[in-house]
Amino acid sequence: MVPGEYSKMMPQAVYNVELVSSTKSIKHELWPLDAIDPVQAKFPCCLVWTPLPVVSWLAPFIGHVGICREDGVILDFAGSNFVNTNDFAFGPVARYLQLDREKCCFPTSLAAHKCKQGYQHSQFGTAITWDDGLQSSKRYLEHKSYNLFTCNCHSFVANCLNRACYDGSMSWNMINVAALILWKGHWVDGMSIVRSFLPFVLVVCMGIAMVGWPFLIGLSLLSLLLVGWFIMGTYCIKSLLEC
Image (cartoon, rainbow, N blue to C red; front, side, top):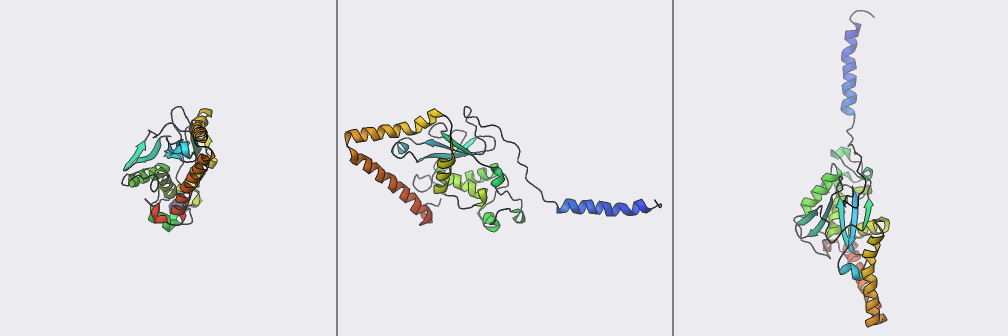
């Protein structure tokens, strides 16, 4: 090598390394989650569901929903200006569904969005990590009044999923959150199934014994009215169910 050649090559080499480093995108690392532990009530990155007293006795498809942090701690909107932490309201978890963080959009800037609605996502409020999204939604719902028919636990979960743009969607609402956990959720154990449906079966049997088949017709109409209300409010008159 000719003397001085090495020193001439050094600045170019350093420049190339710096150029590659500066243009390299920073990727959010998703560390491994702990195993799901129903005994300790730890459900990392899961949606969780439990039946509601009285309400689920008449309509077993209606229940209380929460969402869990990466460490498995449950958060749930349980009352006006109040989001529970690690104290799931209305009893232990009966069903759960673990969500894939790879399906979320955690941008560090507007240019880093991997979802198709980057600007809308930024305007709504983005999350840079799973727990960051839950914490932002918690602060938002802590200033809202709870109402079973307009602003409830499903609203909180939908807000969390929209901040993370889960599955590339910002259209999460009461209806599709409920459908997701009811259709794809896993039962914790056999006793959870009994706890969820036995009161409803007993109410139906007692109603038929005391009133007859008209009781079953009335109960069916009640369920249709509830489903109709949430569908109409969610998709037809959105301002009714926005909180």
